[in-house]
Length: 399
Image (cartoon, rainbow, N blue to C red):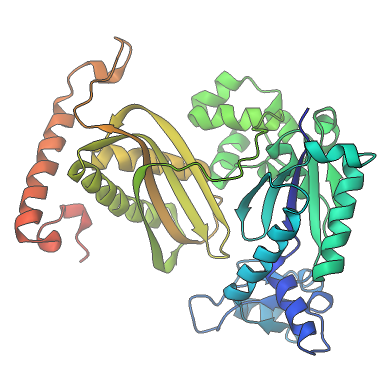
């Protein structure tokens, strides 16, 4: 049986800034006073990126405008973000953790998974090993982490999100019903705003209620994502810690927005443009994609992604956009969006035959699909001759 740790730095940006300030002689500790990490109130980064526990008591929320936070607490202390500094602290932390095991999968600047299975022989229990790591991080670096322990990555991550800060929690399969099922379904990993809203209409409000539902019913309302959420609610998840990101050969595009997208309609317009770019590049390379993924980076720099295996390969803008929008709806948690991206993978030659059955919708000739394909080809000929901006679809014109 594998034993996986999920290690998450508590309020990383604020903690790392506080530690650095104390090193440089400042008497204050941002973690012990009402404080936030934010930006210039006049800039687009003027939102709360991280907050202290005392600031939380004033009702200050991550992601809200800095000016709102100061209205709630006029004596609030604010420090600007320093992403170069955060990268340095992250690197030091990961180097320390690799002194225990090289089997580490870093998933963001402030969190990672560790396969602790081979280390168990040196400890009485997994909790003892996790406590040692947690305490040693604080002794060496001056900031705290939460450690979640389980047999797979999903449950380890869920465990690390329990009570904070500076805690060790377990969530083994036999503890799921007691520790996880009573939680709101919104706290389940990958349960985005749209999915939670749909589940609420089905009368599902807790993870336990989701876990005992018929997965086929969930698939009717949420497609493949419904079954995935049902699996997560039942503690089913990957247990392999991938030390290196698998090289995904593919074509993608992303864009950092000049202004945060706040609505699905705004996001759709961005995805439409990205899909056109990805489709154009796929066709230029003579490729079609059999898998698509959508990436979201939120205003507070949190990231999330979701992917889907396609029934058949495609390089057509409308099909890419349609799939991307569905992935977005399953993933988005309703927070302001700073960046959107679409990536295609599992590429195949455009002319490569695909094995279909009579049950596949692609089996029959689709005149509209062929018409759109010819339109895309005609548009590309014009663009190649006269330039990218010479012609656009009517729906893309910004009046």
